[in-house]
Length: 472
Image 1 (cartoon, rainbow, N blue to C red):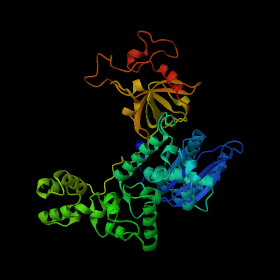
Image 2: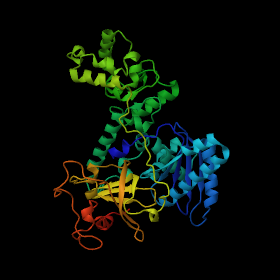
Image 3: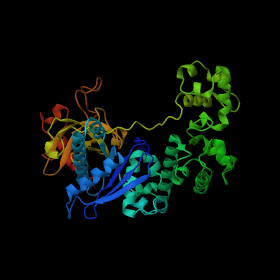
C-alpha cells in the first residue's frame, strides 16, 4: 500500500483515462492539468461491435482537442486489448502530426501510455464522494476519470478509497479485519503526512488523512475555503469553525500554502518553530527567500547555536533540512518505461533480449514485468539479484522501471521467463553461490549438469510452477 500511495506523480499534465471493457465498451475521460474533468466518451473497439477505426478516430479527436500528453489505462478486463488500442492511437497521432508539420510532430512524440492499477475504481465510482465531485457524470465514466487522476497524483486520488478496496497484498482477507483497517489507515496517514498537503487544493478525503484533522474538520476547512477564497497563511486556519489550537498544533506542519504571505508556509517547518527561523534570519542578515535553498549558507551555521530548552538540536537540524529543500516531495520522479521498437507481441521476444519494463505486480515468489507485449513476464525471486532474496518485495516494488533479460518464451502458454541478473556477478558475489535461491523441478524435468544453469541465467523454465501459484 505504501508503494502505491508514494508512487511517482505525473504532475500537472493533461491525461486521458481509459477504463477497459469489452461488451460495455471502453470508458474515456479527459482531465486537465488540475485534475478537472473536461470531456468523456465511450468507444467500442472490441466484441461485439469491433469498431476499431471509429474508436481511434474518436480518441484522436479528443487528444487533439484537449492537448493530451499522457494516456492512462486500467489493468483489469480487456487491459491488453486496450493497450493495443492506445499504441495504435499513438501511431495515428504521429501520422497526423507528420502531415501537420514539425511542431505537431514534436507534440505527438511526447505522448506516452501508462498502465494504471484500477483496483477500487468501481468502489470510488459508486461512492458518495464521487457523486458530489461529478454529480452529472455517469457512474461508469467516473472510473475512467479516477484512472486518469491516479496518474497525475496517486496519493491524492487513492485516499478517496477505502484502503482495503485497493486490493494490495496477499492474504489480506485472511487476517483480523479491524486490525488490518487500523494498520492500513495508519499507513495512509503516514504517507499523506510525509508528502504534505496543499491546503488550497486538497479534497476532503485527503485533508481528513492529515494528522489531527477529522472528516468533520476537513469538511469545515473546505467550506471556509469555498466561502472566503484561498488561505493566505497557516494562521488563517484558526478562523475555521471547529478547528482549535490543539488541532492546529497537530496538523499545521503537514499543510502547505504555495504563494502565500509567509514563504515558510510552503515548507514542512511547523509554525511553532518559526521563532528558530527568525534567529537564523538575525544571524545571517538575510530574509527567508534568500535563505531557502541555500545549502552553502546553511552549512556554515551550527545547529547548536539555535537550540534551546523547547527545540533541541535534532529539531533545528530538521528545520535546516527543510530550508535546504523547501516544499520537497519525497516521491520519486515520474518515468515511463521505454519499450523496444518492433517488440509489440510475445512472438517478437527472443531469448537473450535485454528490455526495459515496468513492475506491474509483486508477490513473495517474484515480480511481474510489463514489457509492452500484452503479456507480463515473471522474474522469479531467484533471478532478482545475485544475493539471496527471501521476498521479491525486498528488491522491487510496483511501478519500478527495471531492465530485464529474456530467458525463455513459451508462446503457446503465454509465459515469459525473465531475469534481472544481467552480465557478470558483482565483485565479491562470484564463485560460491550456495547462498542463492534455488528452484526445484522444471517444466522440462530436473536440471542437468551443463544446462542453462551454468550460463548464470538459471533454469528459469521452472517459473511455470510459479505462474500456477498466481490468479491474475
